[in-house]
Length: 144
Image (cartoon, rainbow, N blue to C red; front, side):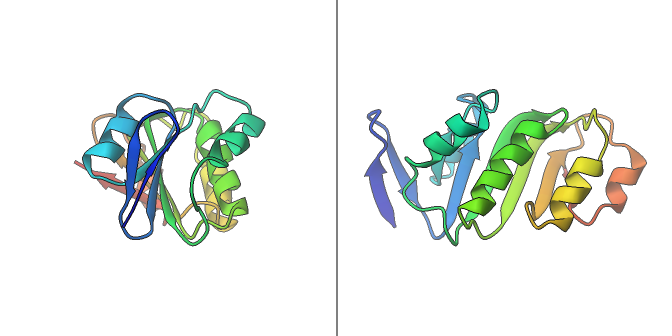
């Protein structure tokens, strides 16, 4: 276990080889802290260059399983951009976790990301409508 200060007065604890990336400074960061896993609060609305710069602050990404947390997946573009950057930095597996999986632009971008090895699983709750073809995807997991 490694403890460190992120420079903003917050200590983070790494348990095993798991890292949480919160798309914004909302619920995702609080969830990561609740289960005592390291987190790097990313703003999914920023440019990818900003995301890459922000990831420089994270101790080590290589060979870690990474959870990207967000409250909602709309198009999924920002989440997949973060996943792409994490894989470039040699993350082991990338899990995308969200409360509401809307997938407003369809599922093709996630299909492609899965085929390219950018994402391992996408997990959303059943708190909103889930299109039937979502359950056919090997990358998708629904939870209560």
